[in-house]
Amino acid sequence: MSIDYENKISQTVKAVPPSAIRKFFDLASEMKNVISLSIGEPDFVTPWSIREVGIDSLIDGYTHYSPNSGYTDSKTAISGYIKRRYGTDYDPDGQILITVGGSEGIDLAARALIDPGDEVIIVEPCFVAYKAAVMFAHGVPVVVETTQENDFKLKAEDLEAAITDKTKFIIIGFPSNPTGAVMDMEDLKPIRDVLMRHPDIIVISDELYCELNYADDKPSSLIRFPELHDRVIMINGFSKSYAMTGFRIGYAVGPKELIAPMTKIHQYCIMSAPSTSQFAIIKAAAETGDSLIREMRDEYNHRRRVILKGLSDAGLECFVPYGAFYAFPSIRSTGLSSEEFCEKFLMNKGVAIVPGNAFGRCGEGHVRISYAASMENIKTAMERIGEFAEEVRKGIIK
Amino acid sequence: MIDNIELLRTIEKNARLSAAELATMLGASEAEVEAEIKRLKDEKIILGYTTEINWEKTYPEHVTAMIEVRITPVRNQGFDHISNILSQYDKVTACYLMSGGFDLMLIYEDDNLRDIASFVYEKVATLEGVLSTSTHFILKKYKANGIIFESSKNDDRQAIVL
Image 1 (cartoon, helix red, strand yellow):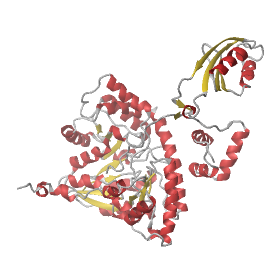
Image 2 (spheres, chains in turn blue, cyan; image 1 turned 180 degrees about the vertical axis):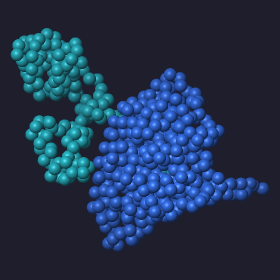
Image 3 (cartoon, rainbow over the protein chains, first blue to last red; image 1 turned 45 degrees about the vertical axis):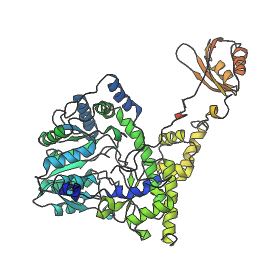
Image 4 (cartoon, rainbow over the protein chains, first blue to last red; image 1 turned 30 degrees about the vertical axis):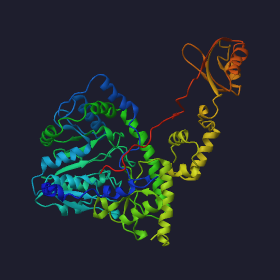
């Protein structure tokens, strides 16, 4: 008798669908010479000055666990960074938790806050981990959709309409993966007003892409409203802004009362984030790190403009994204669904991009194009998307 | 309005971008880019465009030397007089006034060591005002003008992590 594994797996885990992006990419991995504009991580190598500090810490023998919430120097550097960039104060002692990437912070927040049946508002299209984190924690995701007509920004009335007496918290992520949308301080004011009418609702604000903002040098965020300071948990990190994905370092900041239960889970599950990486981020978070970000951001901005021009030349409508490193054009004019478009584009032109519906139902009719890729590949891909769109419209590709 | 520092940094890394490509990247019009490049050339801010070549791979006879020169400054002209003379030689590809233990640094490129040696002792050392020289040969170029010559780093990112 063999074990009936299917029966052994938790119903909660089984209920979470596999990542739709991954499903699609099993296809691409079998093809040769594919140009990938599908990757959600920077193509830059971590700046040397940051890597060097990590290496030095190894040479000096710092190879042990750090305190659970992180080294004081690392948390102090993060506190200084937030003060400098957001103008907001967080006490390194109790209000900052260093995590293994931003994703751990999202998971910790979900597990620390959710009781079975609690509702969590998720703003789609969004990073695929939000819904999964809520479901793993036995919560009920409630989706609020955003659309191209509103530049994929969250509308206050849509948020208000989704709130019930079971709403525990809301997760918002701007600048957005996958749309590239940014909500500036003016856009956030009506959201703050809704939250002021519902003083019990907590906010998880995922700001991993905060430094990749091409419209404004200062990150816009709900943490900049002092009246929300007692209930916003900001999830942030170094992966996207500093090209440090492999270091696996993020952080959560917020009121002590909320950071403490997250730290409790972190302590039991992870103990502490990687020590080498914690040393490296001291360098990144320092003021001298700001110019490293700026250099990469300028380069992304050049590529962003080339992508937008390419899409416009291809006759594909795209709202102007001012953040992250994604464009999210509409492909409705081709008559294809998102998945058909991506599959045929991959098969016929050898370019991999991600169907928009992988990020929520309202992403249907769109595709996510990442410009964390070389300019050469971006230019080639834009030529090919132009050919492809034309061939589809003429019926050459069916 | 075009940011000329951003423009210069961009073409410093890649001189072959067309005005149309630059216009898209910088969010300007092609005419603006062309006018700005013309202005920068007229004002001798953009001086020329060169190609970085790994000679070792195709023409190993190519030799680069760095020649340190100590000189006595000439009245009213300081170091300019001798620097101007030395800069006239085609094979002197760079000439810098330096702080520290010597005065001029010459970068000299040629096809054989003997020619470089004769340049140093016939042309440089004999110039009035030159006190001494010290010649260093480049054995291998690992990086020049921001380009690493033999980088084996490929894109090692996972196609998909989530």
